[in-house]
Length: 181
Image (cartoon, rainbow, N blue to C red; front, side, top):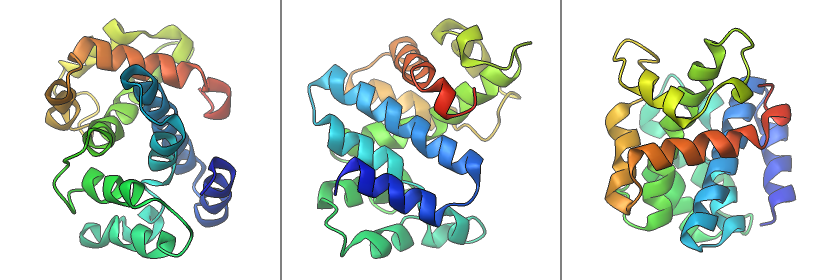
């Protein structure tokens, strides 16, 4: 599957613009991480882009999250490694590969970064950096939905938290115009 095909599926299926923005943010971060590790940017990006495809159907039924996405994509030429990463990001399989572990950590980090940007006067990603997000990371009451332990798993695949947050912020800043921030 090409990136354009994946994006077409997203915009056809997901009507909530903030969810589309989240998926685009995860794509950008996954691409940046793929570059950092010398991995396949296209594959990693598509995993980030498609990871929450079924969220409109599963937001009230988390037991099915990921499973419906895999079912929707199984006949569309999506690499099994992408499908496995989608399953791993939501706990339907143990994250084993580097891409699976990365998507697992990226998903909540993107929300933490958005929340961090939204508390600045300009409400823009350009107003923050990794250090700013790290300070927010330490505040337990801030962006409670962004699972800190899940984000911190970046260390298990060789990226210190500070660097991980910095990569995430820079990746999202690179597409700020596409995600309204």
